[in-house]
Amino acid sequence: MSDSNLNKTLIVGIITGSILTILSTSLISYLSKEKKEDDDPTTDIVEGVDGLIGNTPLMKIRSLSEATGCTILGKAEFLNPGGSSKDRVALNMIKTAEEKGILVPHTGSTVFEGTVGSTGISIAMIARAKGYKAWIVMPDDQAKEKYQLLEKLGATVEKVRPASIIDKKQFVNLARDRALNFTHGEAKGYFADQFENEANFSAHYQRTGPEIYRQTGGNIDALVLGAGTGGTLSGVSCYLKQHISKLKIFLADPPGSGLYNKVKYNVMYAPTEQEGTRRRHQVDTVVEGIGINRLTKNFDKGRHLLDDAFRVTDEEAIKMSRYLVREDGLFVGSSSAVNCVAAVRAAKKLGPGHIIVTLLNDSGQRHLTKFWSDEYLKEQNIHVELDPKETLLDFVK
Ligand SMILES: Cc1ncc(COP(=O)(O)O)c(C=O)c1O
Image (cartoon, rainbow, N blue to C red; front, top):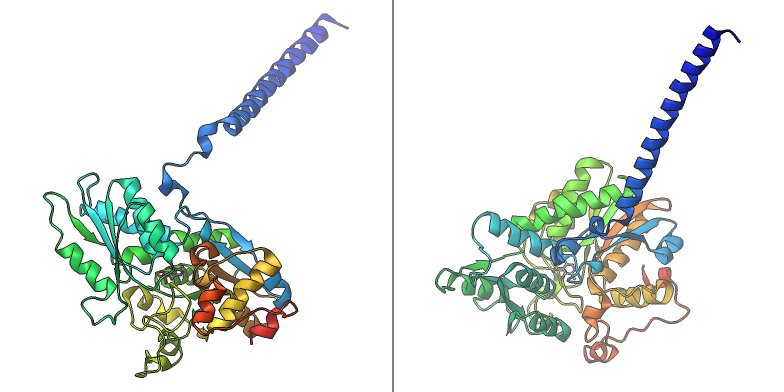
């Protein structure tokens, strides 16, 4: 080899060597950084109890999907730290009040709410985490584990006789009144007002809706939900409908609630409203958390998006809850059972091959002494048992 050829070979060799060294060093440093991030314990840490709220998984409910030929998905809201979807609402209502300067932590300020339970538990939890007190006014006919939980979380619990919304002693009216009359130096009383508070709607519009969209890639045919305040139904519907125009939205309504007739015929009316025919107060059902006989701001925001409504009987809801344990090992509360019955109705209406989303609002653990108690149901003259051979389509008509 001539001298000049030898020089050329050396130069090419040096350049190639340098490039390979740079590439391998970069690769090693990239891989070790990746590894460091994987090992870094701080990347998976959330900030306080409120950091645990939301981002709940969306689970395929196998039994319902197989029986209907649709994909029925339930958002596992019972995995929120306070045990229900209401954690999102309580957090957003308190945050919004802080942003408006209404609530200042560690001043003795108190959050007042009238609730059938779940929202109260979420408020009590977040109030503790953020330096407030909680005062919860509740009807006295709710499952006793809800009062116990509230007391353990350090809330003041005021139980009142169930009454009509026009009665000053109705639980929501009383909570508003308590907040208005609360004066303790610099401490303020804040009435959370989940039925009318826009922060309820926006908790679901800003988080629950986008989570469902992301989890499904927008591939959904129908959303099926019950409504109490209506915040979940309106917030999730308004977000999803903006992004999925073909989406069908169905209300799931328990007995005694006027929403079914409002959606179908634009008249707020429940047959049990007739004098003397109603068995229980708020709504005539063993289901807790959904069903109402007045139009709230939060329900009204999404009402125009509803395509239809399904009425779900107590018997169907009870059988569904027992069926989900039998087939899937899934232990849900009463409003989730109503949602699942209505999701099956939606599947039957749409036909096989559709994707249907609903919410699993809370766990059966919140309902052990009522919806899940055979003794309680017998006392209420409800004699429902799921026959071991009974199939889904035997009890969901
Ligand atoms: C267990 C449970 N499920 C569902 C709902 C209904 O949600 P929303 O108030 O957003 O209509 C509630 C409301 O209190 C509830 O407590």
